[in-house]
Image 1 (spheres, rainbow, N blue to C red):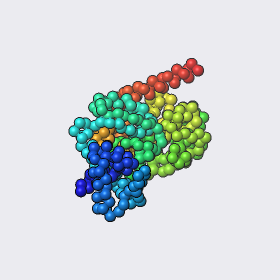
Image 2 (spheres, rainbow, N blue to C red; image 1 turned 90 degrees about the vertical axis):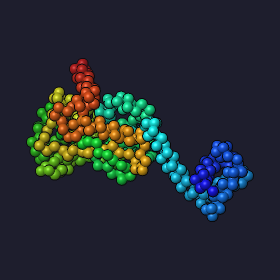
Image 3 (cartoon, one colour; image 1 turned 30 degrees about the horizontal axis):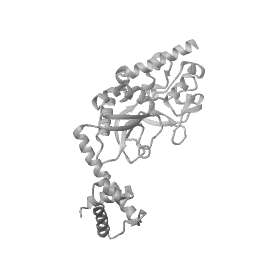
Image 4 (cartoon, helix red, strand yellow; image 1 turned 60 degrees about the vertical axis):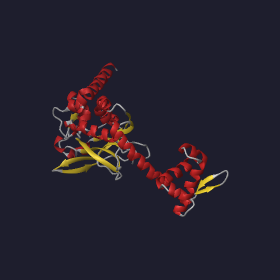
Length: 335
């Protein structure tokens, strides 16, 4: 008996809930399907299916065997598919999830390059600061900032986010410019809370090479980076955003860096995907492309001088942010 064929026949009978329909789908005589299932039960020494003239159901042993068969057949199909895809190039639907600022300013402006390189990959892009569940939400890979807590993921380091402490000139005129960490006791901050736990993230400052956590007071909390920056521009307090997200605001003077001698700890940035012995070509293609894209961006490697246009996808994302700021200026002047 061909055991692999027997597993295929068995799973097809279960999925179709019928010997007759399974035989039609497999292109086999019904008698052959019946014989294969009987031989499989004899080989295993257990009954897999309860059969009556009107009803077909799995036994407990059959249910356990079905799960193993489905997993084995799925892995075989995935392995064969991956080699077929290598021959014809990456293809199919690829679902990714990225933080909003990275997606809007870095990734989206360069997607035409990915599309030109891999025209048969259909991208489905989710953007936000929420930690998605790759298995439950059927996401192929994610870009994440910070240390990964999920041990089931494979992570590839693609860069580093350099953070900055800043505030508006009007805020600093009201509260004063801090010269030391002790001065922060009289200041307030826009708080950023975790979508998962609802708790505000602590700030931190590097002092003598050591990162020191610091709790700030504040009356406004958000969990979106665009809202975080917008609240700072409205004077609700100081913020600690990624430097690349506020470069044009720093250049225009709408935000001012404070305490540069105690810069926050940089945060690692990774592209992550589920553990798999046979990584799908479309996922591998995206991971390699993202690593190449971020590797060419000095600002995301912790360098900022002369790197803005490079970081913002050849100037496209940089100009987008400049235009947003210019539009906001018009709104303020005409409002």
